[in-house]
Length: 330
Image (cartoon, rainbow, N blue to C red; front, side, top):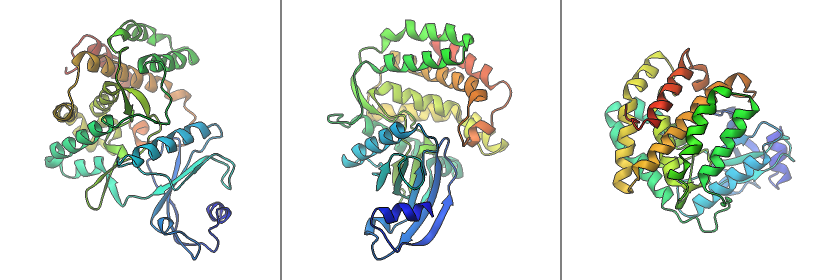
């Protein structure tokens, strides 16, 4: 009923549901629904399968606006992102910020890769090419703000998180990151997705790739973005849907990480020192996120949270110090 009221307020009266709103899994702190409508006042682009994304908290308007703006920017430049049909704050029939985008019929790249492990290298190559093409986009007139170097902004966010929960066990690692930031202070600005991995890439029925979930997007050093993907692939087991899948992903983590890195390097050169720093940074940030879970009040938790076992924090800690020692491939 809220969706019908929302549409009516925007001139689409007499709307009928071809498919009523159905929950779609995969959101962390958003609620996601798929639906399809028809009606005499419904524009053609609204007649296709759509996705409604509700930012289910009262303080998410800036985040919703950020994500909508960057998706429009990327899509307008020919990048495979979903330009929103609607995006606005919480003054609506739902009472929450929202975004409505076209629905991609298919599945995630992660599902494609796991369904046919023999094709993983080919998919990794396509994913890396897609990532490199994002970094090649001009950031002129980008709606994202850019002032201080990305490392300064990211370190400040980490510092606030550590202080908010008094997580003193992270102070030594943070000091290392702050002391070594000189490695990446000088940067060439690029558009960074900041959460680029197979769960955030959809594959449609024509095997085309579409990138979703631009919540963390920022302008800065592209090595930051590449390293985030490397770290995510290394800990891909956290997204496994069962014991067998998690064991498979753990066994494949070196292959996934290195295969992606090799493929990206064929499209764009990388600086090892920058990459090493940023991989250490992202492993540290993931380790910190694990420690923050007991304080997490977000409304939806993904499978990755439910799959965490004992010792994962210690595994993250060891991985971080391994990376800082310059043995990131260990």
